[in-house]
Image (tube, rainbow, N blue to C red; front, side, top):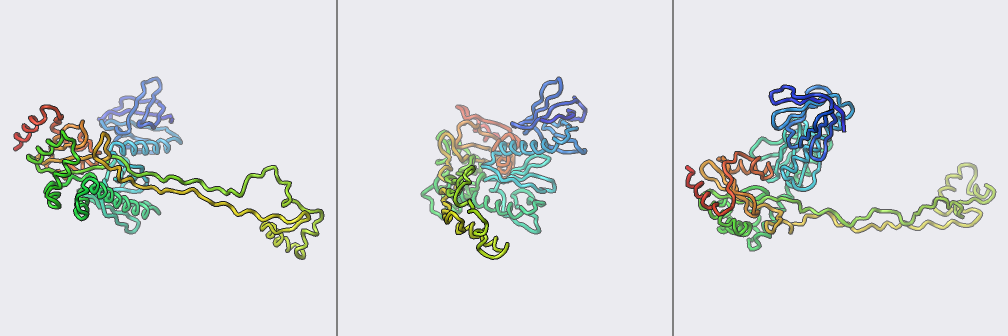
Length: 434
């Protein structure tokens, strides 16, 4: 907890409140506890930016347009900035549904200082402004030139990262590895979903159906005439199959899959190494091997003068020295036995679209006259969502970046629940389209 001078600013820049307060960042929010006033709790997701407009002053831009200014933090300023960065990154990862545990790097991304977190399925970039999620399905390849990393990204300019120092090659290698692993999971998932499909067709379909990417039915059916129908029937809940049929009949249908949770399993079975032959012997120094016989002449009998001391102690260290009480036994060879290690692996069999808690989201996009219909196929609760959008590919990227939360991906014009009136309302929607 830090003590600070604070000001709460309205969206138009006017001061609403000021004074002295305790400030703490953690557990998903920033807590401002003014002296004699009510506590203000701000979730990290509501903090749009963190800047330092003046030395030793932190300005928090809020999602509603307002701001909080913190000053006179003293030595706790650096710690608070670090806690805010970690908290905002954790919140952004949760909102974007990033999969797995991250590897963290610091550098200059898009010409501003940023933290880069590499997850199993995406690269998450957090800086002073809003966080950005770059899915590996929309990214690649990776190039490094003169310590500057460039990552190609669909639908936007390439991402350029610099000031990584000695970790430039490490980040490039990790991104390349994660890109390869993501494509491997897609291939394994499709092979298990459609075991009757021949390997070359699975490979071609996996190249299109990357994690989170919706592929038009026409492209899938060029691989196999029944591929779209088979995928929809296998992935969709029984009461959603009519929805897929309606979308296929009235819109330009696309099918996609998106991994929801990690299937990586940590390494197990390793034991810390210790030398079984060496045991503590504090207080047990009165042994034959550590005693000298009376008189130093015997000890110095290995040569003339002081130059012989080195040879003598070398022999003693090897257990071959002699003293007046007999030979010192040789030390037992250390037992360096280690436990068996099962390395970290991916449980690809855990990738499934069925059951009450599937690890893969199955979804469909239907384009029709300036609007795109978004339908979740394997979860019972989400309604049909209609977006005002002309480009399904751009909406697809926006959905992926928002963790497939429709409200954060674009302009929603309708939400149609799956009740007894669903078919009627969808029919009205299709008929009203120009």
